[in-house]
Amino acid sequence: MWLSASRRTSVILKLPECPAAGFSRYAKDHHLRLFQFVGTAMPEGEGSLFDDLDAALQSGSSEKRVAMLRQVTDLFLSEADRLNEEQISVFDSVLVQLIERIEARTLAKISERLAPIANAPIDLTRNLARHSEIGVARPILTNSSRLTTAELVEIAKTRSQDHLLAISERAQIETAVTDVLLDRGSQAVVHSVAGNAGAKFSENGFAALLKAAETDGKLAEKTGSRLDLPLDLLRQLLLRATEAVRSRLLSRTPPEFQEEMRRALSAAAEAVDQEASKPRDFQAAKVFVELLRQKSELDENTLFEFARARKYEETTVALSLLSSASLEIIKPLMKSPRDDGLLIPCKVADCKWETVSAILATKLPPGSAPKAGHERLKIDFDKLSKPNAQRLLRFWQVREVSVRSA
Picture (tube, one colour):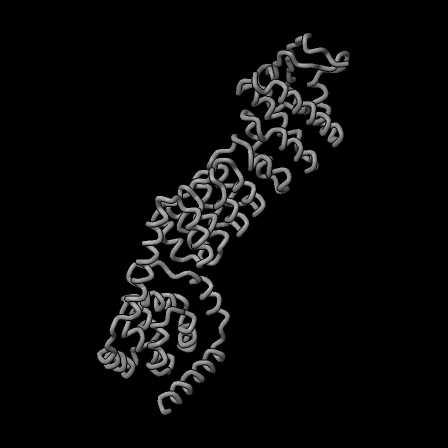
């Protein structure tokens, strides 16, 4: 029979200084008072709570430990708003011992009950948050305010994608945590944190989001819909997005910014057209690059340096020679609004992606962000075999000769 709430009892449990006792590590030079609860219901006519706890810890019986775990948890929750930190630490020590060798299903229920409690036992909370079973860890990772930013960062760096996903759903997430989520997280994690209005992003975090959004329309929409996305990054996102995504994002942009966005997009498109239509004189470049070849100084590194220095004519001529393709084949590819055609001579020339990316950048105005689909091009380039690229390039050259002789 349980005492009624009106029968207020002050329970003081004392620990004998005995190594065999379940709580002996708390004994020092004198008996320590472990708990003092006011208004706590205790079993009438039965042994003290300490005796039951000690028996549960020493016996190793799973049933006893589970029963005592539930009882102590109930006791804590009933008094949580009245306990000070010292009293909470007592519960913490007991509960941490009790959860050893307890099945995950039981721990998950304990986790769900403790997660919303602002002063939940801290060591217990940390243990549950790091549990390998996500059913145990998720409630704490998603809802507990007891975890610090540093602890969340450590968990995000070392635990599973399910743990990262749970963290990404917190009501508030600091930049140090989102940086790790974006760096380690799967696509599901990145989508989750991008759509979380309570997540904060560093400059590097936003840069990572924009990069991932280049090949992910849904992520681009989530990123572009964030109210904290700086206006200049929104412009970059719109420039890189597909037409469908761009239209949806513009429709969600605040009315006062929509016209500005359209002007920025129009100006960017005009700049690309002007860059592509500039008059080019390849004569000096042909002489210089040919001289490098005769001296055995023309290789991919030279091509990369030309492209990085934005030497358009030298880049074009060097790619022509390294791929053994006519300059009349390469020039249209460099002027084309499409970039996939350049992958063919670059693959034949044994270019690394870093070189290909630098070549593609010479087609754009200085300082421009890569065009939409840049990451997709890298995937296509990696898949393209050199023999297939050589066959296609030979076909283009035969066709170009046929056109000239017609």
